Image (cartoon, rainbow, N blue to C red; front, side):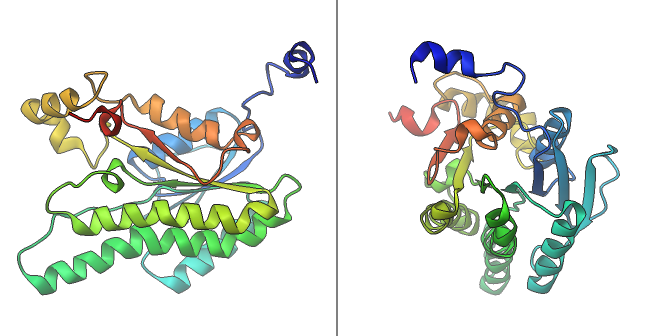
Length: 260
């Protein structure tokens, strides 16, 4: 196909479209997850959101909410089954939910915190994807899994080994799933956000000194806009991104690449 015919082959209303895709998102009740859910809904996708509490902040005819304790294996399995029954298909899985706690001095408390963080940030994405992979395999065009990791997977931040370990593990899980499920036309990628004004980063953002310090770490001298992160995730969910798989997409204004 020539370059000219390729250009004319695209319909402006259809390129990069997520219309009618059924998108499963964890952590959809607030923060980044809520923004992702709202964006997909505006683009005429069907969204099945999951969080540990009811979500009354999103009211839309194409939004369905499921309550699930992401630390509970049986609850994850039940939620996956419920999600599939809603529309009898899943096109996109977005493992977004995550927690973080700074390390505590008491070993027992820190050990419990470490396990809890890994359960939510790493084990839950593995389990959810495992339970829903059958749904993706049934699709004519396969499916997509997007794991929301962090630049913490690339850098050595202090006093938070659980979060760093879980987000690093999520990158490894991404590569593993991409290798195993590629033959079913399922592409799997990880998105590694830098500094955005989210619930998790609110304290740092509201502290002028910390906000300016972190801005200076980027090549663009600023924090990211939520639309820049959400836009990346939406792109990865489109058919035009299907040939991208096994990758870590770093959305950080250049922090990781900047060096000295």
